[in-house]
Image 1: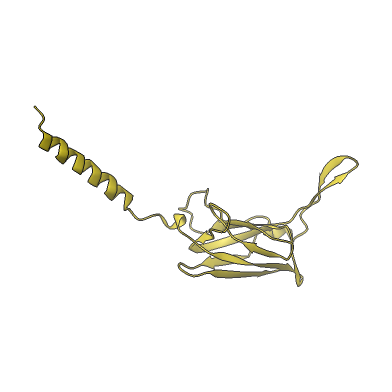
Image 2: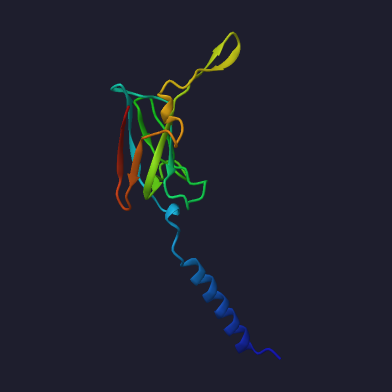
Length: 143
């Protein structure tokens, strides 16, 4: 027959297991640090460009791709999970693409990328950034 004492002990043990499981350290890719910057091409700000950071640590999940979109003045804020949350600490390859969508004769037309093509893919881009833990990173990307 189960006594009240056994029920209390079992409940306390279950509660301790749940609390200890919640205290485990997060993986590096789940902790983000602020990062923002300015993208310029030939000395001029680049508006409406998409920036994607590819972690050089191959053990990170493919879903970890910090990104940003430049504003009209070329400035941007990096985010990973939600706008403005920054990027996890680490080294990254940087890709850049800027395309414009417009209308021509009643149809939607996408203009080709007007930045150098080598920046479209992480395996051809020579742009690198490092985000350090605990500090706000200002990224100046000049092409």
